[in-house]
Length: 146
Image (tube, rainbow, N blue to C red; front, top):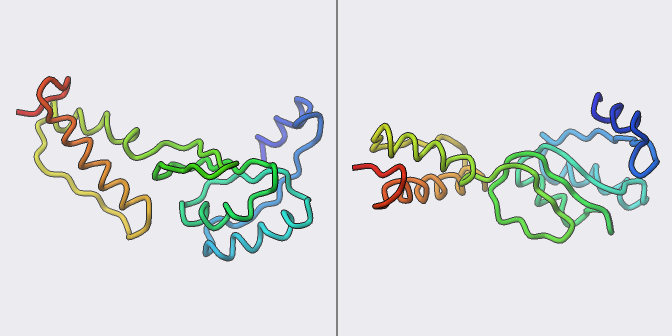
């Protein structure tokens, strides 16, 4: 784990070496939460970080370490306001707005297709795509479609 080695070489956090406990974030959300719960309950974990889908983040949130952060690096659907949870990933509107301005405004695209399954992020992505399309078509928009 090059990032862990780099942090430890610089003196750790704060002054302590990192000891990662790998968990398969691709497993069922309840299973991931169960695997994280044991070290949290034993106070062996001071923070949780990962790159996983929203349903896993939501399953982990109730068990996040007391006083410790939960940092989610993956792109996510937005709207997270749980205390101690810090999403670092991009939201659909942030990802789609520049693309929709290009496609709708400059290329005058009239149709779009969003492919995904039925979980939180794809559903929010569809809503964001609609909103970004409407914004790109507004009069006065830098990317106005005619």
